[in-house]
Length: 108
Ligand SMILES: CC(C)(COP(=O)(O)OP(=O)(O)OC[C@H]1O[C@@H](n2cnc3c(N)ncnc32)[C@H](O)[C@@H]1OP(=O)(O)O)[C@@H](O)C(=O)NCCC(=O)NCCS
Figure 1 (tube, protein in one colour):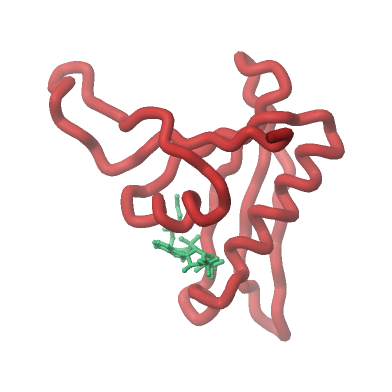
Figure 2: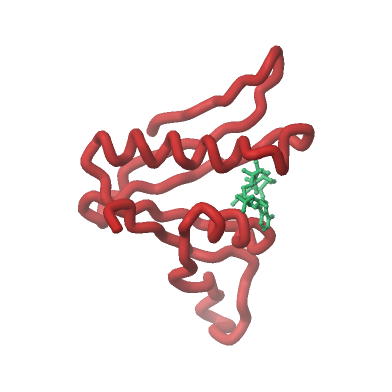
C-alpha cells in the first residue's frame, strides 16, 4: 500500500492511500481519503486523487475502485468516478446502506 500525505505549512492537509486490487487485473483501490476540516472545500481532495491516479497510471493501472461514503459521492463524481453499485445487506437486499462502490477508467 502507498500513502500520500499533503502538508500545507505545519499542518497535515489531507491523505489518500492506494493498493492493487488482487482480483482485478490493472485495478487499484483508493482508500483512507480524508481532508482536514480546515482544508476541506479548497481543492486539496482533488489534488490528492489526481496525484494518486498519476502514480497508478505510472505503475500500469487502468481502473481505480473506491468505496465512497454517501455524503462524498458528489466529490468523487466531480473527479470522474461513477457509481457501480450500492452496498447492501444480504439479509435486507432492498435496504440501501451508506456507502457506494465507485470506479474510474483512467484510459478513457
Ligand atoms: C469528501 C472530501 C474527501 C472532499 O475533499 P475536499 O478537499 O473537501 O474537496 P475539493 O475541494 O477537492 O473538491 C473538489 C470538487 O468536489 C466538490 N465537492 C467536494 N465535496 C463534495 C461533497 N461532499 N459533495 C459534492 N461535491 C463535493 C467540490 O465542489 C469541487 O467541485 P469542482 O471541482 O467542480 O469545483 C473531504 O471533504 C473530506 O475528507 N470529508 C470528510 C471525510 C470523508 O467524507 N471522506 C471520504 C470518505 S469516502
